[in-house]
Length: 204
Image (tube, rainbow, N blue to C red; front, side):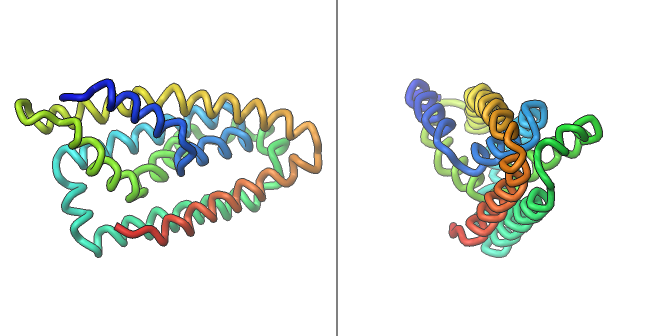
């Protein structure tokens, strides 16, 4: 690996830039609390691991050179986000959700975060374009890609956890107002639906 300080700096800047994962964690935490936010972050990190392995093994390159495969992943990801958005839109608000938090399976939240990340072709594009710039020709490209992907996840993790914590605190303040509380689910749903529609229009 080379230019490691540059990689770390670029990764940190990217991590604090609001993107799909950033917004997903923010609205999940604000609407359902910090515990759900943390589990969602873990799911996203599993998705990052998948994209790292795909980039390292060349699977991502194969997918991205096939318009059919790329569009399949793109539309699956878009449909999934829209599905989550519709579910969130139908919720009545955080006050009721928090009372049911004990009934929300951790595995379900984890799966949602994992699928949101895994079915995002923008991540595959990013990893294929970004990681190779820091790979040295003197060492195993596979091992270096794995290490860079792991480092990317480790650097992004505390930032996303911080987003979850702050968003949950902010959500707690908002939900002290009953009218605002009832509107959170609808806002969350609309944002997720918008993200899904946006994802459906991206190009390679």
